[in-house]
Amino acid sequence: MIRLTDQPFEPGALLSEFARGREETGAVATFTGLARAEQGATAILELEAYPGFTESEIGKIADQARERFGLHDLLILHRVGKIGPGEPIVFVATAAGHRRAAFEACDFLMDYLKSRAPFWKKEHGPGGQRWIEPTAQDHIDRERWD
Amino acid sequence: MIRLTDQPFEPGALLSEFARGREETGAVATFTGLARAEQGATAILELEAYPGFTESEIGKIADQARERFGLHDLLILHRVGKIGPGEPIVFVATAAGHRRAAFEACDFLMDYLKSRAPFWKKEHGPGGQRWIEPTAQDHIDRERWD
Amino acid sequence: MARVLLFGSLRDLAGWRERDVEAASVSVLRAQLAGEDEALGAALEGPGVQVAVDQALVRGDLALSAGSEVAFLPPMSGG
Amino acid sequence: MARVLLFGSLRDLAGWRERDVEAASVSVLRAQLAGEDEALGAALEGPGVQVAVDQALVRGDLALSAGSEVAFLPPMSGG
Image 1: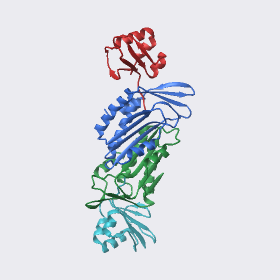
Image 2: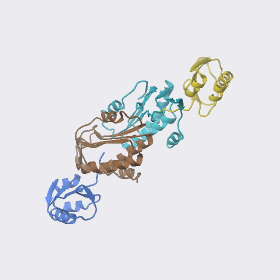
Image 3: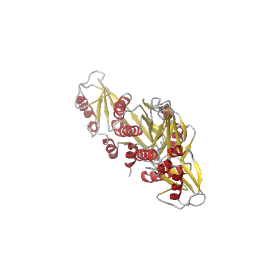
Image 4: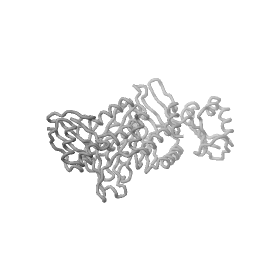
């Protein structure tokens, strides 16, 4: 399932629901991205998506992940709108028979979300606001999967 | 925190507690290992630890992970005793500034738990019982970190 | 008449989020926007800016029909 | 008198989990156990079997004192 939300969410509730009732899934990996306060430099993070397009682009990479890693299931929830320090921005969960596939798929999906998924991210801090683009490291991380 | 339990546990409750109130942690990775039914071949998994020694050996590798990956925090909860299909066996959570460290530390800890941590695992199935030892792949996985 | 959407830094630069613009193709649309706002025109050609027509990424030029939705997407960053 | 603990497959093989055995060192203890149960003696020397004395892994021989806890640990597998 791939979903955007403009409301705070509880990663643990998502994990419990995701892991429940699986009899052949040996491995569930998750990643939760949280907004960092950066010692007060960031007051608020603002995430924008292109509704419809964003979900469909993420859906394409999710299909790639399912096939490449033989996933049993996956879940991606991404916040949009204004996000305070310490709040979850993104939650990714992957289910597979064995741990290597679950870990790698989760890692792959996050590298993609960081540098290719249709989101635009603005930091509001005491010194004003700025748009954040993927870092050189984000591109290097993603290229590991090419 | 490193803890053994002979009671079923809820991975999501652990994640929610672990992720809460962090202002400088950008990344939380988790792994949940679940008992597989193996299409009926495994009815019950039985895990044995060496109380005291097991926690202290896991503690040593946890300290290594903290230092090597610059972790902000980690949590390891491991079931002992009898475990039914679909029940969580192990939960590992790692918190770091950035995602690569959180993922790698979680992966590292699981590779260690699979092949070096003082647990002994017996499968009870319709055809009897057998002790499970780490697979060749488990050893290869762990050696990636040497 | 195409519906034009700007995202992220492009929207802040232009001062608008969406507009209808009369243009028969993406290249005509770019020229039209650049004629009105030179800085925006240059930014639309900037590194990493992608174009989606009717929610599909396109490269190069494409004819637009009435009701086409054209989105200009600066470098993306989620997570 | 050392307290001897067997784990995993070693316990199933021996048919006991813990016992007190009179032995002045790990090697004497091994000989003592092998003398009583040849199959167990061989298994204790098997691949991947480790020994902990007072909850610390040891290699080779070690003198035991009264109240030492000696654990024989077959190959480990958690998760």
